[in-house]
Amino acid sequence: MTSVASLRAEAATCTRCPLYARATQTVFGEGATGGLMLVGEQPGDAEDRQGRPFVGPAGALLREVLAEAGIAAERAYLTNAVKHFKWRASGKRRIHDKPNASEVRACGHWLERELVAVSPELVVCLGATAAQALFGRSARVGELRGRPHAVSPDITALVTLHPSAVLRAGDARAERRAELLEDLTLAAQLLRNGVPALRS
Image (tube, rainbow, N blue to C red; front, side, top):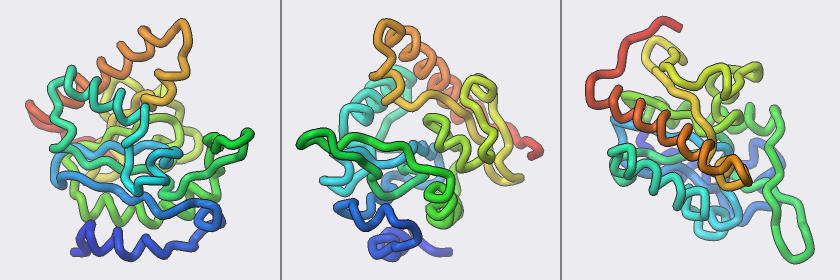
């Protein structure tokens, strides 16, 4: 079986979609294998510069909420559906720009291989892009939240908010944060009690 390290090395020169041309580097997944796998949308500005997933403000919130849910972040595998930072300029700042379906599809090559290499007990999709990468373009966070779903005979997943959506929620931030905590607490319970085998 191909290891995460070898996949990371291979992905470093990826040109499967145009995003590589403006990104600083490929940001591949990292962390512990065989347990919880968290999949976000794409790296942000901080991740693009550092070459590691979830090291910016959204990552800080994710780690905070994981800890509250009883999950040690270092025991999870963190990755994104898309491995290059898609951005648009706003003055001197680089602003996140949502990846399109063809970019998500092109990067699905890496996510599929990561799933095999990591062999997670449970996957948590953080946000709509991650959910659509696993369940198809019609996947909606609001419809899928709150219960486990079968991605395949070997993969069970939960769907929740991306922590960046919590940060952008304004007056509803506390409510959105509580929803993220609720879903990650469910993930902790499933990992503790046994992830159910589901039919896709």
